Amino acid sequence: MATNLVSYMMQFLTPDMIGRIAGALGLNRSDAQSGVSAVVPALLAAFSGLADKPGGAQSLVNTVKQQSGVLDNFASMIGGNNLSSFIERGSSLLTSLLGSHDQAALTGAVARSAGLGQNKATSLLGMLAPVVMGLIGRQIGTRGVDIGSLTSLLASQKEQIAQALPNGLGELLDRTGLSSGLESARRATTAAAPGQFTQYTSPPRERANPTFGIPNWAYWALPLLALGGLLWYLLGRPAQHEQVAQEPAPPAQSQSVTVGGVDIKNTIGDSLSDLRTSLQGVTDVASARAALPKLEAARTQIDRVSSLVGQLTPDQRKVVAAAIAPAMPAINRLTDKVLEIPGVGDVLRPTIDPVKTKLADLSGQPSTVGSGR
Image (cartoon, rainbow, N blue to C red; front, side, top):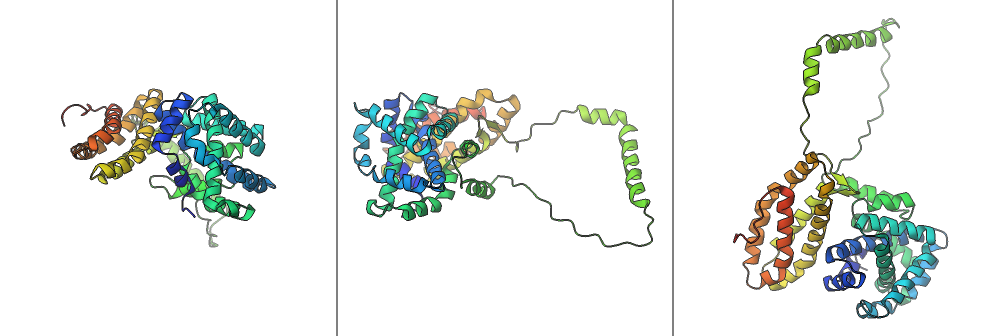
């Protein structure tokens, strides 16, 4: 059994297949990648929630068994004459499982998270629902698909599914009730992620030791005296108080920058980390091809951030620029080194050059693409 069901499915949906999905649905490659990255964990979240409801697991088992032949024909189905009927069948499958209300809520959440229109999100969900079902069946083994094996698989994957949901999509699904059972896993994932803050709950107060010899009036008189002293301090020094109040606070570089449910600063940080990790592993053409899917995913996230930057305030743009600028020298050195390896430039340059240009724009630095560096 695979340790990560989402990764297992994303390996099936190769970059070539995602490119063909983009062409079939009239999307650019970046939007198709964002859509697929949202749809796969969203469907798994919805199916996991359904499995926890009375009768839901049996409905899932019946449907999974019906998708055994989908995977063999899916690649040839994309762009073919029967694609429309395939999508309609997938949409009907979702309606029968989730009901029209929950299906509409799922579509709306995916459309908002991935930045797709409602119609595109509907088509993408209808296209991938049978695939996700087929891959669940393949993972379990067709003869072994029953309520026990299905619920056990989905229950074991809740944390991985929660981790794979794009920023903001988990909250949207929580509101609809579609991701029932994933909320605690998502909260645990958020709490464990570096750079995230967890809510602090003060410890219970210790019971005060009894005191003797203090009059009862002192317990209310002392706070009044303290309050009076504070008022004297604040009101007795108006000039200095006004001066402090009028000084504008500099933008905090640690502030959250969230637009449209996307935590831009965290998304950039994750993308930069993925870029560095992927580039460091490139030593020849074969390793370059192996690194390409992760680099494409980072490019998709950076393109998404770039499309949202127009909605940021000037202070928020400074925070984003400050998060990117320190990483650029290392990124530039790595890309220059990698692209000098014979044959690697042909594989990676179409992805790397646009990424560097977008990062330079976001950080307010001149682009090194085409500079000979």
